[in-house]
Image 1: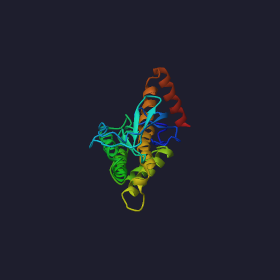
Image 2: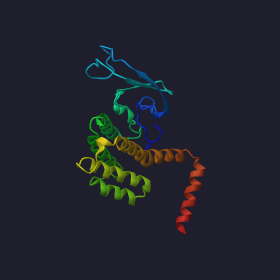
Image 3: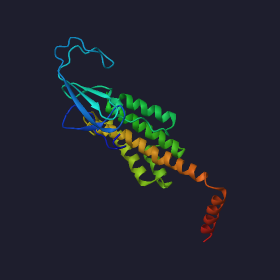
Image 4: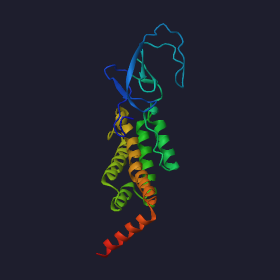
Length: 229
């Protein structure tokens, strides 16, 4: 994607020269092909559902990176690929249970963004329980993580997800049906949290453990002397 939190949604609008490709994930230039198929009596079925029998002024955009084709109707609605293809896959370092929760949210995002928001909030709760080793309110667990020294940017991301997910399920507080960019960003935020709170620390620890034994001893000796001062 063009960025974990930045997202340019696919569109048939030719004035938008590039968007995030739902196939390869690259922010890439998209060629435009206009198709007037008003005389077609039976078009191929390009998505799961009833066959399209009449297509008027369908627009096809082709990714200059991977060649993937996006099909739009005259109302700029993405017909294919499915809308959840625009949402990034879960971070590889998510635990299986949280990944399943994430994928469930991803599968319903195009149909019910509010449901996706609620499910991602539940995924955040599961992640907080995993990180703290406790159960309780998300707000309390985030406070525990902050006290434990989790970086402020990660705490802020958690609070954004907590509050956005909560507002999504209360009518009048947040209309996610009309704000697909927000829907996309909440998935990116959860991936960012996993990257900062799990993946990067794990990578640093692995590299540290590979240091020569003599260097590790010298570091421990330095830290011991510092603690005595």
